[in-house]
Image (cartoon, rainbow, N blue to C red; front, top):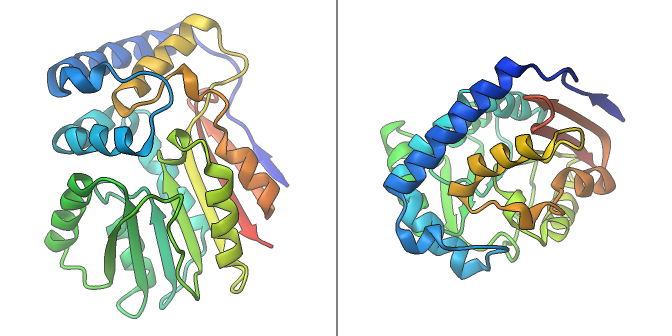
Length: 255
């Protein structure tokens, strides 16, 4: 197992930046998200998640810019590289959302490869479809499905999930099924998302929750830890964090 952790010291200036970003996210949340969605609390069932992300779809990319500002895009790109995909491979993006990862995956596997984007929200997939149309991609397939019941394709070489499994309490089963599908090729799975750093004081954790609230994340999800499931179900496990432990990337090879 290879473990690479971010630097431990947490500077006041960084917290100030985080506070400003949390405030910005809260303002966007209040301005762009319907009041009914803002009232959702606790663990959301599939219908609530679909409703939330259908309503978020027009503003999702604007809200997600908060995370891109602290390096989430670079970490996702690193996760894609660590999948070690080749031309002709098949890869699944679990919880693909508006499809931000799809063009990069499509370029790696090439015209003979296959990219499958899976998401529960038809409105998020509509945005993803616009993205792949603009990019002129012919090797991307979009599937509306609950990832808890999604049938992973045969001859699978890679699975990616960014900011998706944190709101799926049954993430262990999703990861286990993905690994079973990957085992025939020895493929890899990469998961990126948010976590609660154990060393953070409570007020800093509150800032993190504020940043995640627009996406349905609350303190109710504190026990949803996809990286631990990945460590159980894969070999050659790699784990690294950014933003003082709040942003993580976990990668492993199916056994």
